[in-house]
Image 1 (cartoon, rainbow, N blue to C red):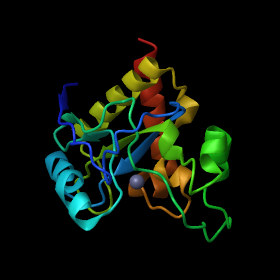
Image 2 (tube, rainbow, N blue to C red):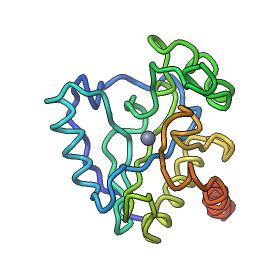
Image 3 (cartoon, rainbow, N blue to C red):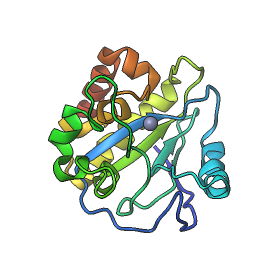
Length: 194
Ligand SMILES: [Zn+2]
């Protein structure tokens, strides 16, 4: 796995330059558009978010060919899993899993959001059903394993955006087929024991 540093410039909307308070969890996302490449995602965070005044970003993006790009240093905040909207099902902003994992970071949407205590990874997809290329999955597993080991994040604290914000269809494939996410985590676990 090769990591290319492509850091965003510090700005209010995608790289606030604030330090993470803690590293409690690793949260996985999909980019939402089939065939979109990692550098297009970078351009979106670097230019469009600032222009449109939209808060969004992630620390890493895994490309269709398995290339890994780092957009934000591990010790800084990215805007990838915060929410201010109630989940229609639970009536709460964050899921039970998120409130269990994040504690005070998942209680007050205006203050401490899970963004202050997590690292976010975007995954490119080959189609709008959210299927992953084998190369993307392999690098995603290696990156996840490495970050878990570096920052001592246990496998139980690797989650999807949907596991934090229940109404988010992200990543679509693993939201629809949670077994495939379990299989992914097993793969990450196998990489960590080496
Ligand atoms: Zn997401």
